[in-house]
Length: 43
Image (cartoon, rainbow, N blue to C red; front, top):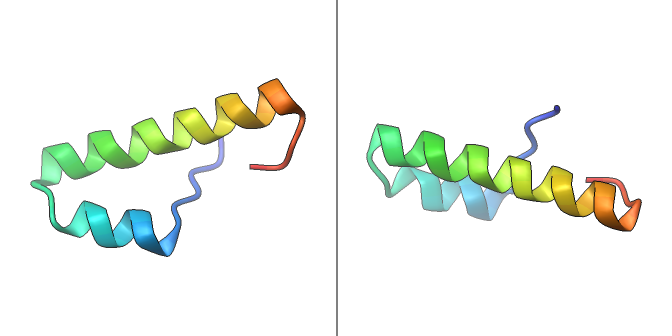
């Protein structure tokens, strides 16, 4: 899976602790991939 974070997600992640930032970005990446698969769209 390719991790793709938007500028807004990166900005938000910088305001979190290191562990929460990692969880946030991973969760967003998994969600983006799932929606991409579900709707047959590019992430």
